Image (tube, rainbow, N blue to C red; front, side):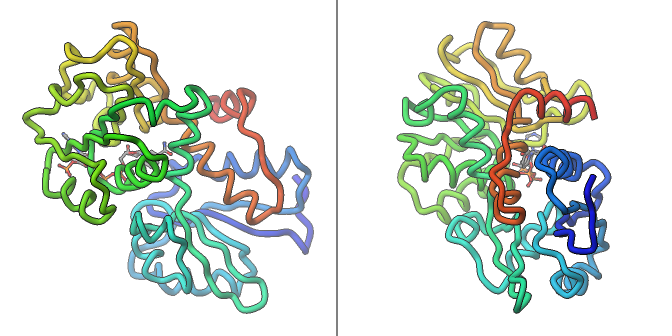
Length: 280
Ligand code: NAP
């Protein structure tokens, strides 16, 4: 790795941060493209976030990713916010102005989600109803992406229905239809794409209680969880013949615009990168 005194420094802030794959990913690209730079993990306690965030441009950082639990804090702190981040109400990527230190925050999760689907099945999001399970931070980004992609009908289903109604309200789209948790399996009827954005499936043996009887054989099922890579949700759908997409691609694609903005190089997402990250 090439790091001189002029190296461009970026990183990721969160807590905990040791599970983050972003340092591995960005440093892989820095090495591949022989860029004089580094990407470091920064673990910060809640009470220190604001102070640390403000100090970053003074320390020479060109930008940072923001991860759990600081995406909303960062949204409230940046000097300027992108249209996408405004819709989502959260920032996952920040660029610092070299001269003034002013911060620009955006959100690349919606981009990452859409590209992960579109690279495999072009036009799928416009083909018919999309079912989205969950209404947390990730669901907000996924729904914003689907609205932007003109998905004709987004059936949003969450255990706590009020949170789904809030997303519909904030994204202000008639294409979002909120369904009750009781009707979560019924919502699958004639869906073309099904997305799990809940955190159910991260722990071993955990499974989203959805009955796939009404799921059409041509529907594509995706889970944005990438650890484990194959959740029970994905495995169950695959076992009955449905096509599936795992969540790792979303993580890789959401990092592309950040790397390009900071290091001025469009990095490639390919199988070699996927395998490298999977081995880590
Ligand atoms: P979050 O804000 O905490 O939301 C969690 C969601 O899961 C809520 O909708 C919650 O429902 C639901 N949920 C939790 N336990 C449940 C249960 N037992 N039964 C039914 N629903 C349940 O989390 P998040 O930030 O949206 O992240 C969600 C997942 O997405 C995480 O696994 C994260 O790793 C993944 N993610 C992946 C990427 C990627 O790049 N691939 C990016 C972002 C996030 P209630 O509202 O009813 O509590």
